[in-house]
Length: 500
Image (tube, rainbow, N blue to C red):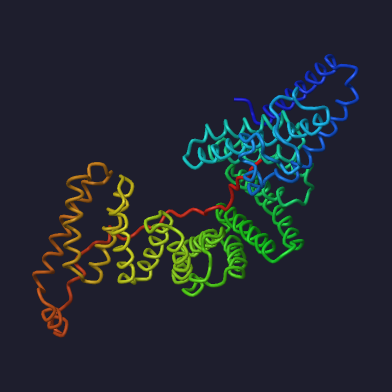
């Protein structure tokens, strides 16, 4: 497979060759009597293309006015706002209509071209969502090829198309191709839009993510810092408060990403500092996540989930540094946001709950941990699939541990029976099913002994009030099921797809 850079160069040569051949053919077949008229028409055509492009097809923007003209292709009498009417047969037009017909032909051609690109862009994004990365790459590269053919190499829309090719290759794990494409995107966007344009920052952010994926950590930080400078300029030059807020949210995302790079290389203090800076920026815009805030705010607006992700990343560092109380506070605030924005059994919610429960266990608060594991068991039991069932079996073991620690023996015994049934019927799919089943039977005997030994609450009370009697409940040993530290990894903010 040719590299993106080679493909880009090849397509550029091909587009220039086709342009030269077309020009030569036109010159050979020109009628001397109409040369002056056609030259005038070509100039008008280019004027129409540029004005329409600037008005309707702003590069990198999905919100254009194209939808207003969606029906123009099928309606013969539709006006395009220029006073000209559609005519299928140019030979039937009068001489006075020749120029306007040529204008409409150029306009209609550009509209059809852009509508086709939009359809392919949407299809490529859908492929990305469904994990069909090879198809997404092929579609994005076909868009790039057509843009090269129409506009040449150094055009802002080509820069946007290369950006998308880079994202698709990154998602597919083709890091070398992704890097080639994004470097070309940065170069072309700087050349056509200016070094300080906000779309250059978009591509620099993606460049930083690609470099991190390639484990080129210092280069990644350098790319993010360059993007951060451009975002600061964007915020300073914003024309209104909404634009300024958007720019500052993007600044927070970049700080978040710099924190992720430092997290990956073990610079936890620096990573935590960047996460805290990002959270401070986000709170300045969104405020605290309280009940009145949730009722009065449009939580569908992009940025809220990024805020929750940043909080989780900070919480992961607190866990690594064994700051469990601080971690619980950070994770809990993040969980409130996630529960508003996501489905109850979303994997991000389950992961955050798992981290909070683990921190409670490390602090010896098995009662609070048990509440969370009980909720996890319920959510995971409602989700089908082997992975969810394995997660459920791990959660119920941790719940049993908490119940034993809190001397809730009857509840623990009931859950041990449920676990026994699962391990006996479906446990063959698990690696340690036999040892887990053996441990379950052992715990069932020990827990059952405690239940029969103290059948009522009064028996418990009288046993504890007796100074001669010892408390032997600790002999029930479920330490093998003590939660292990969750496998946390920093979550990046990026992969911004833009319409070319």
